[in-house]
Image 1 (cartoon, each protein chain N blue to C red):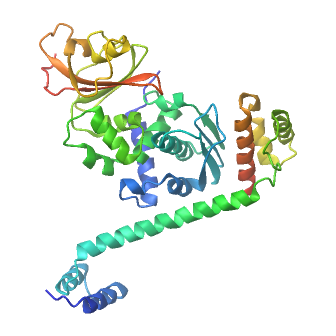
Image 2: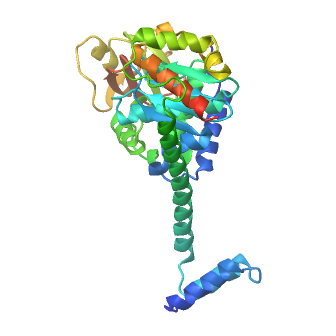
Image 3: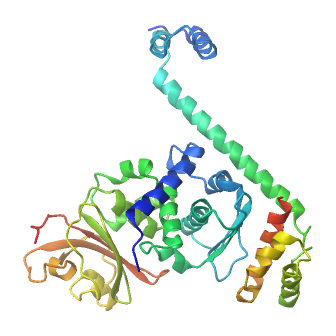
Length: 134
Length: 266
């Protein structure tokens, strides 16, 4: 078996870029003759493709989080340190429609009294995030 | 209450497979919940902001939203909670999501309900058949085996049990009990005997654990078949293998039963 990897790589590139003139079986045979472990190559290509796809989504998710952090506070203002009374007042104001129709619909269907302070605060943040994502 | 049908369970599993296929998952370490949540509907996972609940989803049916996980859960619970919330988003898409879940919701597996559906989805998402089966077959059943599978898939023991009983070829059954009473049972396809209902018998290791006479079994131990199996009340000659462990977090006992030596059908 040939160990001329440069030539094998060239054949591999040629095969990938234009393989209309050979069948898959012929291409496999030719590459094998040139010293390419086709199964290993395909397995590695598959892993590289999968990881590339997953990494792309991971980055999109991270960017969306970064965007959300920048937009934090644009609907309800900063909620950090707000008292329960202030949070409930915000919720009631949103229920009355003062923060848009989506926030109004969400608040109308929520029993804010059942939430703890932290849960109410984070819930309002999540509503805000939905709103800013539009 | 009616049990979650096999057909509906299959639909939940299929939905999990389709999501995994979207990001071409090929190994357990590629089951990244952040990536899966984003692929499912541009959902972002955040930790914190919850006290009484363990998980919450606030999302729009047309994409975008936040999954929150309570801070301080162990990694297995954190992942299962996130997978459960993704399950609601994928399986129950008609309404704007605003759901909050406590630890109790993650113990509902067999009752026909959206919570059970999300749990079945989550188990399959974290331990899909094509990765789980090859790693679980050909080994003697025990909770120790399930611990190692739970560690590899970074998942909770309860969910791992559920998947194991669903996919194994062994004659095993999962029994979940609470306050000394059997809450529910899941039998493997070829575990044919019926399991007793109601109170856990004193002659089982689980019964001894409930009464404080002994600790968790720590391994498979022999118990008389009459103590576990209906129709075998008068059989004092045969044993069944049992591995029982008390799970403080849920206040429940998990028992893995194994018919190591098959019995004659009654």
